[in-house]
Structure formats: C-alpha cells, structure tokens
Length: 190
Image 1: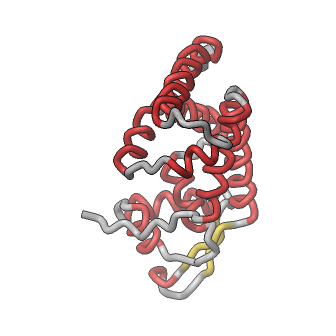
Image 2: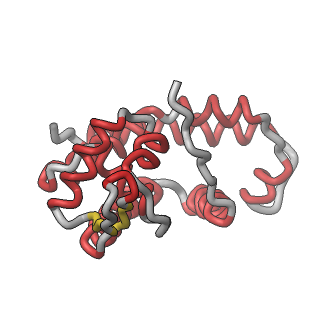
Image 3: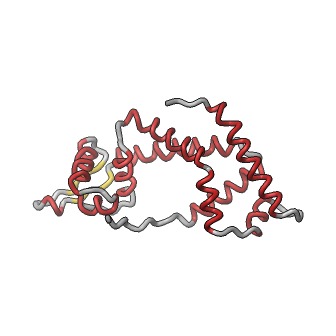
C-alpha cells in the first residue's frame, strides 16, 4: 500500500509547471504579486471544478494516507464521518445520525454502538431508546484532532514542494476557505 513518493514528485512537478504556464499565458501584463494575479483573473465555478477534478493524484495521496492513518484504529470512513458529524457539539439520536450520513437506521445503530463501546461517543440515556442521544466523547475529540493533524502535515508537505510564490497563493486560498467554512446541509436519503 505504501507508494514511492519520489516517483510521484515528477508528476506533481509537471502539473505545477502546467499551472504556472497557464497563469503566465492568462495575463502577460506585469502584475504585482501572485495574489494580485489571482484576484484579477476571474474564473467560473466550472473552471474551478475542472481544476479540482484534475488534481486527482493529490486527492488519491490524501485518501490513501488517511486510510493508512486509520488502519491501526480499525475505524471505517463511516465511523469517522459520524465522529465529525457529532464534533459540532449538537447531540443527535441514531435516526438523526442516519439521516445526516445517508445510511440506514440499522447500520447506523450498529456503527454508533461500536463507537460508544470504544468510548469515542457518549450516550445521554433516556427511558425510551428513541430519545437517547449521542455526543462526541473526549477520546473521540482526541481521535479527530489526530486525524486533522495528520491531514495538515501531509498537505503542508505537498505545499512545501511548491515555489514560494505559489505557496503564497495556496496560503491565501486556504485562508479564504477557512473564513468561509462550508456548512453542508443534511443529506436527504433518496
């Protein structure tokens, strides 16, 4: 499962060079900084989406690394999703968790029970099982913090390979995204 990072470096370098060439072609007029260039160049959402699709190798690296990081924990992606869902501090019952994750009630019930057994979630009990709600436990928060740190370290490793001007562009983009953190509406099961 471990891939040779040195083999991927030329591919990433070529992709970065292509992006630099496109940026240079888009505006031959001298510009102040890379950030000014990005601010002046308007892109449609379709163009941005196309570029996101084109960075499949980066996404692959992030997903494989996440899978490697989760392997020792024996957590599934669905379990991690449940932890992230409850990280907002709002207590939810199994039906609400199932609806927001787009999973069946029975599968979600088993998933939640496993997380409670591992002490990653805690239960606020009620006489009626349907009224029991779940919250992220301290161990669950620690698990998410470790996952977040791993992703951040990996992302910084990728960004570190870029020239300084491009690192500035990435930093500006990440800052913009962080200040406008997306709120994902609950998914309606089909």
